[in-house]
Length: 131
Length: 507
Image (tube, rainbow over the protein chains, first blue to last red):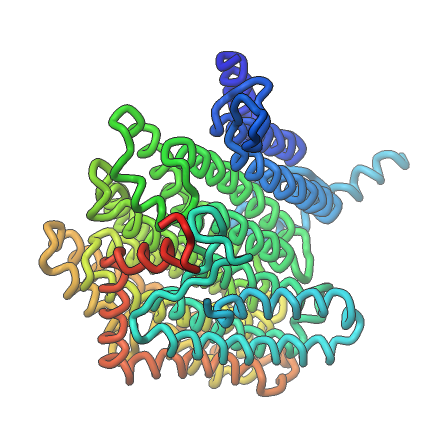
């Protein structure tokens, strides 16, 4: 079980990091959610892995697992869910406002020109369709 | 138990909620609420500052649960100082923003309140999972503020900012998990007791967790390999928001000061002074890169951003010496650089408002409206930020140089700080002459901007007056900061206060 959990965390982290380094927002968002899954699993595992143990101390329970990491994971899930929603909305907004979904900012050399260029790009595409 | 401690968190939370629910559509009422909250926060901060002056650490156990099991807030001199700094900055920025900036997008005031709540919480909290939660609170508010007013470029920069910080949050959680799995505690005071007892086999895990945590704080503080997000973010953020963000980098510095002296300080056995060997070279490198950036910047906003990076480098390199004297100097410089950077961001906004399409870029444009006044403010702020006499930047640098005198790396320290100061002076004088002098050669077109009411100038002026006050009261302030630093380096009092709180049965 340890091997399985460790592999899952490692694979998700690797895939998440690869996607985060991409140049477009959609893969980056996917990568971020993979990363948060990996982190949540990792946090869960910090309380040590155990099967069929309750996270409470009881007289009839043979043992218990540490309840604190589970509480932490719960908080982390809520926060990461909210953050994913925020980044999705921001990425969408950036796409709609600038007409592309690149992560990078326009070069500093001539900001004005590049910004105008972005604004014209969707218009040009639309013009092409009309023709 | 002292119930006043939770006021700096509770007040903005309640006011923020009221602003969202009840006064969403009434700008005037929202401004009144926000300003009232700002004034009350300042009053509460000052009261807590006076309270903390006797050197006792006050603890508030949430829900009356005793410390290692429940969540505690802890107030010492450093926390009180940061609360007052936040309140002063928040009030000045609000004063600037109520003059029309708050109407350019929606929900400016509630987001501002939640940002203040996150900042105050981060300064007060006594356990590091809650530090994570308050980081998220202040970050999610800052995401909203960052894109306030909209615009394609700003939203793009906002996406970068959010992505960088989300990765930072993931690393934060991994670090928290690693440290928890080894020590079994999330409370900082309890951690300080558990770290020396960690078994040799687990030392590597603990160190990994601690260094990862340092990485997260370095990301917040824009330390060198992790500074890349700051210029794009701050230069594209709305002016008042960038000014408020001047304190967000200091949250990283505060967390480093707090955790790496308390839990990984002199008593930590194998983990003693874990942060120092990483922090010192990174800080000096940040200083050099930041000041070079000042020279290379293409707009005033960018220049202010690089000045923030440079000042963070100087601050953290001084912190990395980990002596009482150096820390007191670093705290003085922290107060100074926060106010000076905020003033500079506001001035960049004043300039950008007045130059039409030229914004705050360094190119030739007709003379700007109220140019003399704006130029005067810029002159004072530039003197402050480059560390020229007579303002507090000079005293801060003197204190830092003095604090580094006995360190083994004093040669590096002195030459880098003095050299980068020269570079910064060159950069700022170039900017000033381009923006305010060379324009007079051009014929004056129609004024691009209608002269505005006095409130923005009052806001900038009050920040600069803060610099003057820091200069005038440098003596007593420095003595107080030395006491603050001494309290940090005697963690026994903090640990005793937190773990003995509420008379828990466990101790």
